[in-house]
Image (cartoon, rainbow, N blue to C red; front, side):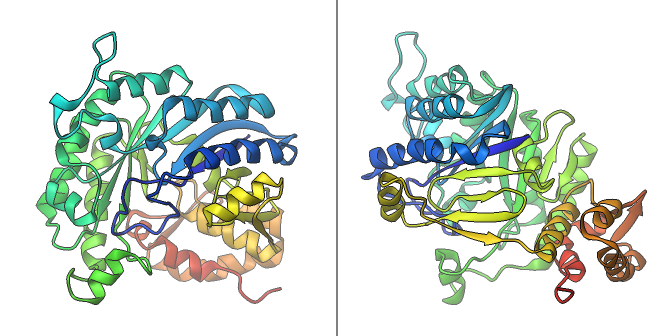
Length: 395
């Protein structure tokens, strides 16, 4: 099974921490949609032998598009790819695009008496979307303003309440490790999320990416530097509270109740093939990784001529081993030593066993059956642990 990711490169405004590819100008929206649909057609031969299990709309902010525009892309996928009968189709949405807004009196209604934005949620369901990923980030006004989010705290709660009328499979994003976020406020964020009864929570540590507004603010002393110890404490709280409420930490940043793991993201972590459509989107076919240009005009112009504006990297055995270790350790399934031996050979097996020894002794890793798995203590440090297991010199 494989997945298709479609990158929608538009946002209303730039969040201070974000380094994803997007534009706040919608001037090229029509040309971009034409290009996205054409890239799907142009690249169908790459996936002619694949069965598509998931379709994922990410960004950027896909919810800035109209339902009909999303539907056109879905129909293009169905027309040119072998899609299973009931695929997981996810769209990332921001609360301000579907909630009733700062001023409820300004919201129009449909002929059925529904607010226009609520009707957008109904529209998503009608065109086949069956999973929502809502960018909440925090339920506190001061956090949202500090991150320059487009929505406010009221819209966050309104959006979830409205979404639950149409969808069962809902995920929300929360950010931890925000400077000056107390343990009390972080617990309140988690408890607020739990109060909605949603089955999936994705939660990420605030990170400082180069060339972002956040990096600039920290450099100028306007914002306190990120405190890794605080972020680690927040993660441990998150892990403990969600585990006590029936959520599995099936990947370091993702917590789901049984039956509600993200199929799209799980496919990435298990090394399945995926096709990335749109500017900056990445693809993986098991042997090669490719990525599209992050320049919107270049992307539109190239696709218009039937050319793919992408770069391709041929992955060596060591590259593929490193990727498997990196993604596998982040999951609850861990890294299979049998798979290491089968896919990469005896040298790699001996190497990973040797490199993992110290982390087993410090109980950051455990060996369950044939799998190396990060412990509760090791989960927050898993990227560093993985780097210790990387193969950097054998080939």
